[in-house]
Length: 138
Image (cartoon, rainbow, N blue to C red; front, side, top):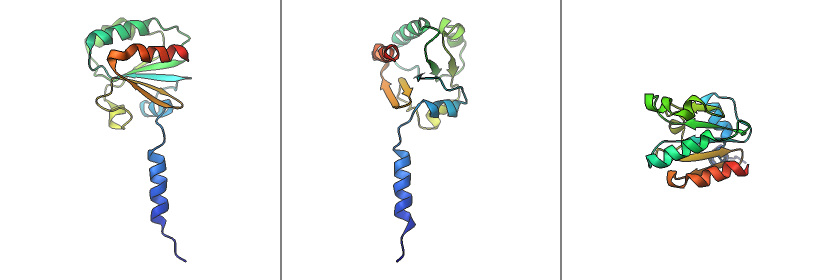
């Protein structure tokens, strides 16, 4: 009895493509040390006032926060002069080449993403308080 390899291969491919994206993948792609609990990815699109408020609140995170921040943006002088980027209380990385978008972990329309071991949560910049509340719960 002959068995086709194709159905098994397709099933395996589907299972792998459905596995939840998590912080380990982000750390591996950007070649950064993986934080203990979470990675907050910010794609600075949308409401600029909300974005500034988000940055201001992130400046107040305790240095013991078990996470890291990734900002998907070109290296701009204005961005680098922001206090969050100069004195971030936790590890902060710039994804200047939009590598996370190229690898499909972040969609171009995404604004705030929270990666943990159990998957990913997406937030709109207008609802950045919800993302921050998830950081405080952990």
